Image 1 (spheres, rainbow, N blue to C red):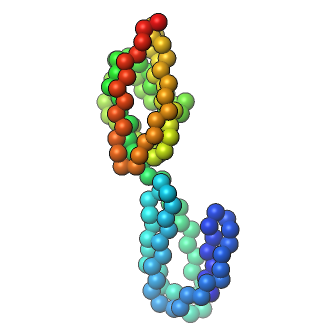
Image 2: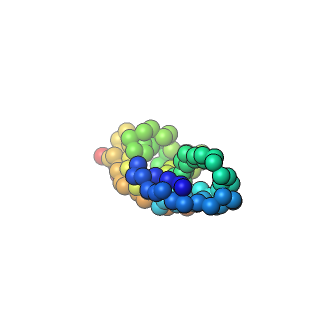
Image 3: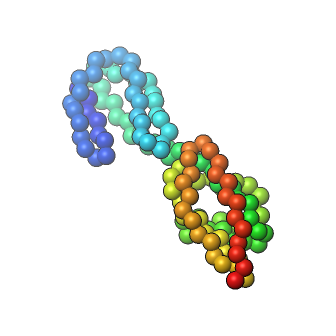
Length: 124
């Protein structure tokens, strides 16, 4: 018999015949995990599976010298030499530059895609 847990909830027992079986785990915004396992009579088989969150990318076209923050964390000063890797989903983006109004927005980063922000800061 097999038992599995989802979000801490126990399910099972599930009868699994000896032999090779493929297990697959899926969750939205996470990379799929798949593995072939061999079940033998009288042997306990355990797996701890950690799914990796999908990644997307963020790039900027803006005035030079602006400080960029993502989710409150300092990323760098423009121009940035490369795109930023972020988990897919919503992120808060801020830009600050002396003599200009702060700029803030929430941006959605799709997995395996690049979001390009074109920003023109407004003088004070």
